Length: 148
Image 1 (cartoon, one colour):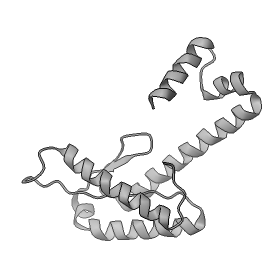
Image 2 (image 1 turned 90 degrees about the vertical axis):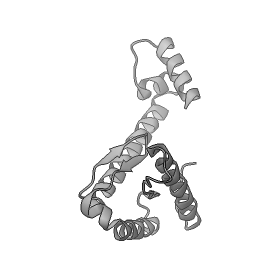
Image 3 (image 1 turned 135 degrees about the vertical axis):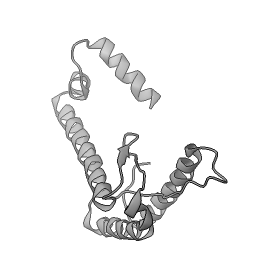
Image 4 (image 1 turned 45 degrees about the vertical axis):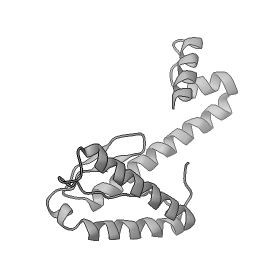
């Protein structure tokens, strides 16, 4: 991410007042590539929106937070927490079906806070992240396209 930020900073200084991905790409590569870069960014935002909608659709009674560019955290509460295994089964089934349909595929990891062994929520996030990465590899082996 640092090289991207460095290059973006360089472009902002070189072309003051231009602003935005489209204009920077247009100045360097021309209109055609700027148009394609704009569409690419649009598709990424649509995929992120779809992932958020998918999570909110399955976890109806829990807050969903976007914590990174394409990472979300769901803090399970009430009925969602009680039926977490069934929800995960249903959402994973839908995701696996999306591989064949050419739709957006997301990987999930579920970890529960344990007062006896977890010193902080960071440990829970770390466990969930490891499970999510393992699921990503599994989905790739099933034919899902993935961004590394």
